[in-house]
Image: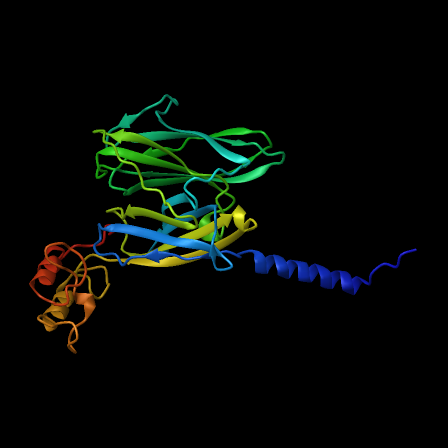
Length: 337
């Protein structure tokens, strides 16, 4: 008769297995590059790569969740959520799939166009092709033709094996939304990317027209193991910090996952002391440094906010262009006040 292993050995083995799982939870290295925001309405570029043991992965997905973190934590919310491929030509099997993603009216009828200041419904039909139940984190992001996110709608559902479910949230189209072709991005995760969750299927993209049709196509990454996406800040977002959360998964790297995050600060041009108010204190701060050039003791790049003739940061001199840009925002309050 075989001797049973001592109970202490079994406990130690279970402990080591658990440690191994924790250590391998995030085995992919995820990088995030975000350019400093040049202006409040400027294009936010998020890019990076995913590597395994120092080499770019050959395929996979990365989920990007951008969280708005203003000075008041209670106002934090998701402003955009996307899933990007790590190989533009990949074809991967998924047990969870988005069968269709359509703009519709409140009765579920197709609605290819809408007006600003009205509601639009989105029908996302998903299927669990697997043999066991799955918990699905569903997300729909709408963005206008200028890549400004209009809204993010989320839901968590449990899908039985073989089940087909419909997620049909109502989305408000703000009056400030740009006219033209707007985009709908549908995604499924096993948990939200900010919590380390991974995308479980490819992103589904659809579109609808806001008043006037146009033709635009969002760019896709071309090099394996890299990703890139762009968007613009909403004009009604509270000032403060955006946290970019990136969670990746790659079958070519053994199915391992990876996570990383980065912050983007955004303030109205001229709010030098970041108190959410362009006022006399900011004006005095600029005047004290007026005429200062890069390399001189009084120069501070915080006050060098404009490069003629475009509103890009830093021309190396704190002068008239910086003063004019600050004065155009003088007295402006945060959009949430």
